[in-house]
Image (cartoon, rainbow, N blue to C red):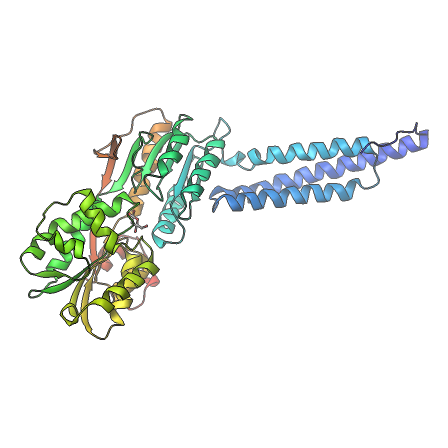
Length: 446
Ligand code: BGC
């Protein structure tokens, strides 16, 4: 809007100079206030819980700045107003970068971006906590974002982190194949991509992989069922993870490799998959064969879907498939759901059920005798490997690897960690004495 500009009198000029001085004083005191806010906001943003929080913080700061300025400026002349508001707008653009100032590296950006699949599963909240613990005293600047089970969010998270200048991206994909586009977006900017726990598949845009030995996880689960089996013709209920996750295949492959001979010799009878039953003489399954079995028994890593599957299977099962049963559950979240569903069936006399992740809730289930075992994957170790690799890359060196995984497009250099079976016999030594959890976090632990 155009303002009329009359020639001011001397008294008016002095009055305007005074007003202008007042504006300057208020403006600079606000800048000071902003500087003091900076520390607090940077902390809030340091381990930002998704893009939304950053947006909310930025927006509320913008509102606060423009709101205060418009109050201060009411009654001042147009030129002054225009200049100061413009300054304030510039400030807010700067603030996006300034928010990360104390959290930035020398080139003004983040060093490492970390993307995890979802906050809805305790497994990944564990990883977030372990990253935060490991980074508490670090000189490197990082930001952790969650994709909340959406490949679209994942891509957006990558773009956010790329725009903040990351040099290394550590990403655990929601969907291995779909994550190729996100990895490519980072690789196009010269960013080194480390796949974390889950492999990003069917793309060349992944440089390294840090992981646990996932086949060993499945083997340990299968072996636990075998070690606790008594007699023959034991009904065996099989469950699997999401087919969009390469790990789900590796877990199943490991479990099948030990269970199949025990199905073939009559120790177990498959209760809930005609596809698995039809392949019970096949020692090594192809990926397609595993896919067809998993289509019948997938939980999609979703505890509610696990309950629905288990209820359907129990409803369809005849008496021969009740009594004392064995259950291959792929992880702790689904194990607890499946265990609850089986406990509620009065025709189930007892069950042995597997898990993985050593989630706190499952450790309590193990102490209470509701879940038989879990496979402990020490996330402290995985975080250490991933950050060690990232720092080596930031230092311009080549990280050490211990093998490779084919992701369908290339062999990805990998660093692999071992896993540990935990049941009621060694909860104390493996999880409490090692400092992974506090004894006080559980009840009934002797
Ligand atoms: C991870 C498991 C986790 C599962 C579901 C897998 O890729 O390796 O630890 O339980 O995803 O999130």
